[in-house]
Length: 447
Image 1: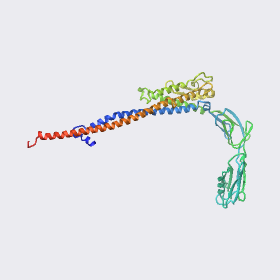
Image 2: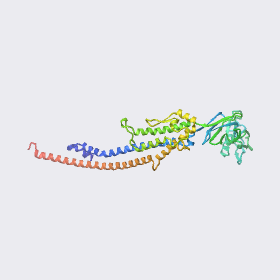
Image 3: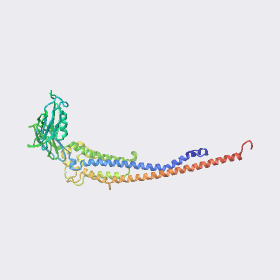
Image 4: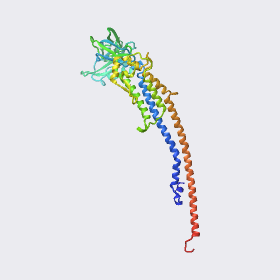
């Protein structure tokens, strides 16, 4: 059919006319696609806003409750002897230790051999005795080497670990070392090397940790005290009888400021997003959500959550008093790190009261978290509702585009058929005109 339409040139009709008419029919389809593209861009912006709200929620959760806001650390006067770390909720305090003896693992060492994988160590039976466990029996076949025996012991999974070590003391530098997998006095092992060439000596006697805590003797079967003080794990690194170690559980100012700053930064990201969307047309291209009421609703809700509710009975009453102010031109929060640190050092609890849920009511962190929960509620939240609405619009636009594309295809075929018929008619009229011209108009020699 395209060939016939091309023949319009011979009939005097512009061959580009059909294509122009078809392009005109495409305009509604392209307009529908542009409307969908605009809606998709709007949804991307709402998704971006939703992500920022999630990030602000994470930051708010880090400062909204006492267990979240209060950041502690452990400082030791002799970290080479003992260190500590916070595990869970702990109380402030200073504790005194003296490490009189480390927990030790029982070790048994066999007499030496010239190599680890060639010289036979004899044959027969070996029994390994451990506390509160049945004896483990090892059958040593003729021709077995140190490597073979070590492998057999390890395959038993009997609470001991065997290895071949090279002492470099000639002539018999290779020796079999058997170590209890438990430490402490209860990790006692003994080996009966019946009918073999292996003979073991006790290299290290297992013993428990021996520590004075506030002049009270405490012990454990390893070198970690994780049940002594609630929420604190103490790690003993070496013994030093006679040396008193001061271990202090105190506020971790760096992590506390880091948590507050994370909240401020995430809040400001949403403020900047709102400014981009409501930009004055004279200042440049407006945001994809310009005029969207959901953005304004969210910003109003977040801004009102910054101000105290009720009467604060602590030293500080507003964020501004501890170094967090609002830029009057942009609405962004401005954090003075030095002032925040100074307020924390002056009264850590009073600063915390501004953010956490306490006897004074909900602090900033708790209020913001509550607002964010409402905004993102799957049923009634403004963000979820906006996303659902945009998804529905896009679905309807897809249907419209499909319908219009179908109409366009039919219209295109109609245009082509009509102009093909017109082409045929014009060609017939031209032929008839030429015939009549020749018959009546003449101009030949015989006329």
